[in-house]
Length: 50
Image (cartoon, rainbow, N blue to C red):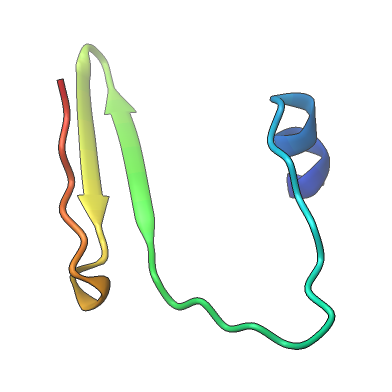
């Protein structure tokens, strides 16, 4: 269901031939006119906006 939704939005996907574990999180949340973003600090991430 999630894959189908992403494909419908133009997201390209491929499946790895071996297990790959990516443990980072990127999040965006909108509440009314405000948009909040967060990035996983374990991967030296930084949320930025415009």
